[in-house]
View 1: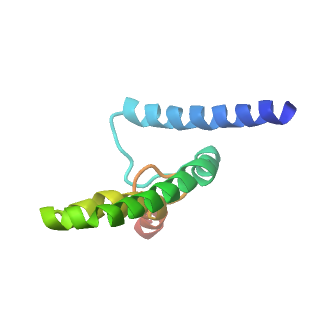
View 2: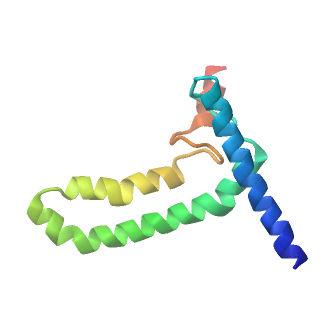
Length: 113
């Protein structure tokens, strides 16, 4: 019971930290090009978002294979592959830990300094 309470408190804190960060950026009317996520965003991303993203990528790849005969006949194989496999894969594997936008945000920050 104690472990369940502790886990619930940690997950609630992660969700709250992410929403505060998003609200803070929106309140000042700017989008950060390079993000500096905090520890809660990184842990939440590592434990929750990345495994879900990997699963969505795998399911999308399976759906793409199943739909391949139909998309080939319709002529939109590239669009189906982009939306079912490439896009979820990019969101899963090409984001810095805790970042909300795709890309290597931390490298860009170090190069610009």
